[in-house]
Length: 269
Length: 302
Image 1 (cartoon, rainbow over the protein chains, first blue to last red):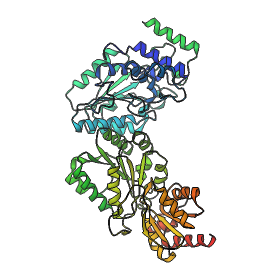
Image 2 (cartoon, rainbow over the protein chains, first blue to last red; image 1 turned 90 degrees about the horizontal axis):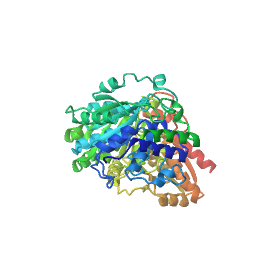
Image 3 (cartoon, chains in turn blue, cyan; image 1 turned 180 degrees about the vertical axis):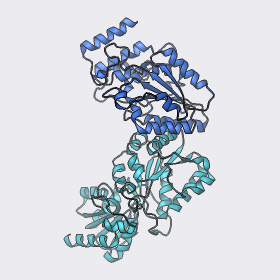
């Protein structure tokens, strides 16, 4: 998986899908691009030819709203086709607006929030009991952490010392309708998670090197603790007029905004 | 019946090291022997039912056979969405046991009573519903649930109303079990605790009685035959008259027969007062004499 998953290309795919399907949830997909790219590229033991291999590592996208970012990765990995991207949201097509386990490469149904993390926790417990040394990644949103079951899972993982579980929080500081600090303030997120027995690092969620090192270091740590990374991200990252604004949680691209967004990505090349 | 449940579970757990019991801090005394014999196959997940179902889904994907135990007001009612999304959508073989269904926790009030569990679970695809009437049906149901490799909701209601069968019945998924046969044109179909009531009233009304330990799927052929051969079918359940056994039988009857169906169950109301189980049955019109009058009135009009 080396030398693939260029984040600029992934963002282009997201925009393409969003434009073709006239879909929402653009900004919350853009914030997790680096996170997914780094996991797939360097940390996930995952054979695209054997996606049902029971010994694979798991990447659980608990914040199902960011699914376009995962589709973009799966496109690069060859699991979904160009046609799938071009026909996004067409009648009778496979790719939905939230994560769905029927799609090859997606592990769970999510988007009704606070589910994926519990399933990931069960997978981590299963892998630990089976002594298979599988890693289980769960990508959750900071808005998603409003959900009680997330904290049930965090308490459980801490208690059972599930050292093979890594939660990555996409801390983009927004949720559907407003900034998280206006709704449920999560100022001390790292400390909160740490207090349940996790080893936690806080990183720039758009710095691939930093993410890479943090994942590496946490898994090399010999403490028997579950891991978490609080990835500080920007909602809408990569497109100047979408960044740090909540407008693009629900706004759709038109010709003009699509071309303007693409142009920005071209200039970054 | 609860002893039969726990004994069968121990037998299965001895054979299958991947079987694992998850409880949401419930089951006082029920799993003592299981814990003694198979401590590593018992997991108290804490008072966190939603996470428990997600964890069960993860364990199932990792090759384990999870049995998820709680009171039925929590599993399946509280965690309906987790059962739908995390388990049923992906056809995972997780067995849910909802204990104390109906009015077992009569003194504790509405929060611990569940008379909507069958209705809500029935509308979710890829899950079976079993509802045993006595310890013998329980033995059949636990083993059936285990053998299915599909998700199952096993409803455990009032467990000490007495035996219906003399021995463990052969149970094929969906089948009704004939309990009493009579030549009249009235047939009682009951499930769970209310099978006892049906049997008690059977002599008086000279009717046939069937027990329905499988509510989903249900053997449509058998139900159709009962509806075609009888003018009146009475369903009895310690569950809402909406969405449970009464609805199941009515749906089938409406397609193929002229039979009138009287649904005896919980009317559209919460319980109001505290009291014994028998008191609450009376409050809800499910005690023997209320059921008798309901049937008599129905027969007069029919």
